[in-house]
Image (cartoon, rainbow over all chains, first blue to last red; front, side, top):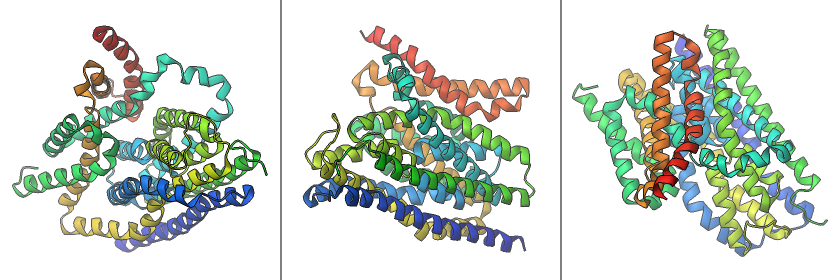
Length: 222
Length: 244
């Protein structure tokens, strides 16, 4: 019986998510279309193609990778909402992971699903409010935000975020973590230019971690 | 109609989409909340999740706001505001806008007043980010079923598999922190910041054990994030004074 209710809840989230996603896609495409119609300014085809081909190869690849790596982590509701509201790796995914860790629930269970969705929804609302307030109060806060003293703080947000997250996850799974960590550090030290395509390397890290985990698990070491 | 990236029309467009996204977030939040109640989850836990997620979001959201401000010089406020509140991400939008601008022969260092250039940039930024919106509805269920299959076959391995995914992501983002170490002491600043944030996280765990105060554990991540960011200021000053 429990299995059935589990399935029907997930199914209802999928159903709802697909409808919202279709609207979101339509709205995203409607924005440039409205701009073109309103200003009677249609994009220059050569520029559009050139721009598109400079962006699509890397970002479409990252987009596909993000779907396959983040959907299992975020659960059904979290994925639909996370992919619409954006800022996944620098905000939504760490936020959901932390919330599930604190609540002591696992992704892919229904409790995990509930916690992840609540975390991502809250994060999306707070982000929207902060950006709106920031734009409205820009004159007051810009000197502070753009002061030279504050620059290191904003330049180092990702190291500060992942340093703290690593303590939680690496300490819990250090046997699995060592190999992908050493590999990634060595890779980025040797080829610094890869920093701009870190999104593509997430699944590489995941494959290494899962491969190592499989070997350790088979040997009964986990 | 004369084009202006900060026109009232642009603000109205953006307001509609942002209102839609807030509405979607609220609908999903309510649905998950109700489901949590049905499952008999502790309501305090759900409230705490809202509180700690909200606090955690503040610093990254301010960083995103800085992205909006940076892009607003060329694209006006409405468009970056929209793109960074919905679907986009800090890393993506800046790169996409710069690539699109150079493709139409303009730069992002001054306001774009040509409507054609602007609309081309908007289209490129939009088309570049479409995959997630299409792939999640198409493949989301299949991916989940795959995970469910793994877990039904061997529950413990299913948990380890997901932990492997987390660790893959975390190791890639930790690796990036070391990308500039070959440039000298300056390049080590992100590494020092990462380590300080990790130390604060450990201290939070220690204090939590000593004082038994649950709130420390709930807010450990935002505390470490803000602590790491705050410490990056003296770390940078110190490194610059040593490196000259």
